Image (cartoon, rainbow, N blue to C red):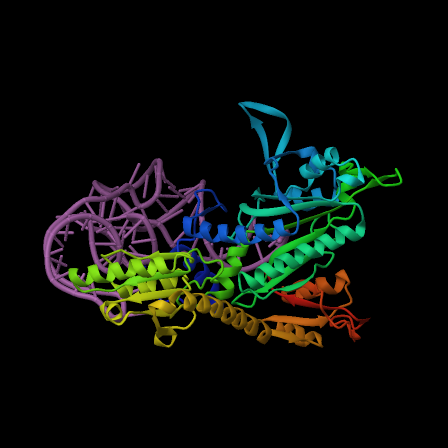
Amino acid sequence: MSNDSLTAQNENFSEWYNQIIQKAELADYAPVRGCMVVRPYGWALWENIQQALDTRFKATGHQNAAFPLFIPMSFLEKEKEHVEGFSPELAVVTHGGGQELEEPLVVRPTSETIIGHMYAKWIKSYRDLPVLINQWGNVVRWEMRTRLFLRTLEFYWQEGHTAHATAAEAEEETLRMLHVYEDFAVNEAAIPVITGMKSETEKFAGAVHSYTIEGMMGDTKALQSGTSHNLGQNFAKAFDIQYLDAQNQLQYCWTTSWGLSTRFVGAIIMTHGDDQGLVLPPRLAPIQVVIVPIFRNDEEKQQVMEYAEIVKKALSAFRIKLDDRFEQTPGFKFNDWEMRGVPLRIEIGPRDVADGKVVIARRDIPGKAGKSFVELNALSHTVQQLLDELHQAMLQKATKFRDDHITAAATYDDLKEAVQNGWAYSHWCESRECEAKIKEDTKATTRCIPLSQDHSKGTCVVCGKETTTKAYFAKAY
RNA sequence: CGGGGUGUAGCGCAGCUGGCAGCGCGCUGCGUUUGGGACGCAGAGGUCGGCGGUUCAAGUCCGCCCACCCCGACCA
C-alpha cells in the first residue's frame, strides 16, 4: 500500500514480520492484550492449511468431532505433570449467568482431559479401539508476551486425540502423524522441517515423549511448527480409560495427541518472505494467480477486459483473481500483489490481446527475469507447471538457507559461535544439566533429537561424556 | 514482574524558550492519466491517552494514573 522499503534482515526481522502481517492484511491486533483478529486473507490461508491437513487426517482414518470450550478445573488436576505445566497460563471462568460457579471452569488450553473423560465412557472393549478423533477449534493460554500468529492468548488449531490397545500402536500413531505434518510442511508449504524428539525439559506436560517438526525461520531462529505426543498411559490412568482385551483382562489404553496451529501461518511468513513482502507457497496461497489488466482508454479497456475474462475462464481450475480496480495503476497493483505474496501474476495489455498471449510474472524471481510470454492455448498447462516449479524453487531455497546455517559443532566454543546466527548440531549426553548450561550461556535450547541420525560415537559438546546421540541447538520462538 | 520507549486525524510523524492544531500517506469529489508504487484542483477528518495542578493562556511545564510497544523473566 505504501512504498516504505522492507528488509527481511536479522536486526529488523521482528519489525519486518509485524509490518508484513499488517500490510498484507493477514491479521490485526484486537482491543484485548495478546489477542489476534485473523482477517479474511489470513483466514483464507488458514482454511487452505486446514483443508490440506484434513485430507491427510481422513486418509489415515481419522474423524472430526467437537468437544466443549469449558473444562472443569478438577479435570486439569487429575494429571499431575499436566496441571503443573498448564496452571500458570489458564484462563478461569468463575461466574456464569450472574452467579458464582460451584466449580471454576477452565477455558481449554488443550483438550486431553475432557476428551480423556469422554473416551473413558466410550471405550469398553478392545473392539472399540483404536479411537481416532480430531478436533478443529480454538484454545486459550494466558501468555505473558505475545506475537501475532506465533504466540497469542487465543489461537486456532487442530488437536488429534487417539486411544490404542498397545504401546506399540500408540507409538506408531504418534510417528505416523508426525510424518503427516512433515509431509504437509514440505509438500504443501514448501517448508523443510526436521523431525525429531523433544528433550525431557521441552516435552509436552503429561507426555511420555513429544516429537516435533522444527523449521528454521528467515532470521535463523527455530520454530516448533507442529507436535505429536505419545502420552503413554498417563491420561488413561488419570481418567480411567480402560478396556477388556481378548483374554477378558482389564487394560489401560495408550493415548496420543498431536496438534498444528495458526502458528504455522507465522512459519510460512518467516520462512519464505522477502524484501517485497509475503511469498506464499503456491499450494496454499488463497490467490494463486492474479490478473492485472493494462489499458489507456475505454476502447482498450473493453478489449483487455474481454480478453481477461477469457483468460480467467481458461484458468478456472486455479484460485484466480481478476484485479478490476480501475482507479489503480498497473504499477501499483504489481507491488500490491507482490506484497500479498501471490505466486503468479498475469499481465494483459493491448499488445498481448493483439498477439494472443499473456505475460506471466513469478513472485519468487523479481523484475523482468521472472516474466515470460505465454500463448493462450498453452496457458492452463503452463500455469500448473509454473506453480509446481515455484513450489520446488521455494523449498530448495529454504532448504539451502537452513543447511547453510547449521553448523556441526564439535566443541563448546563452536556451539556458542554457531547459535549466534544459526543452529548447532552436536553430540549431547541428554542430561538436563548440559542442556541448562547451554541455555544459560547462549539462550539457545535443544530443539530436537532428530529421528534420522547416524548415532556415531562422540563426546557431549558440554561435558565431554561419551554418547551416540546428536541434537540441534538454537534460539527459538 | 524488572529495564527501556511511545501516546497529537485512519496510518506514519513534526510541533523549540507556553500564544489560532500541522505535515506526508490514505480517504471523498471532479478532471487528466494507466506496460513497475500517476498528477492537478477542491474537500472531509482532532476530547493532542486520562485526571488534576501552575498560568491571563497548556499539545508544550509539574504531579498522579492508564494504555500500548521493545528487551528480559516465563512459555507452543
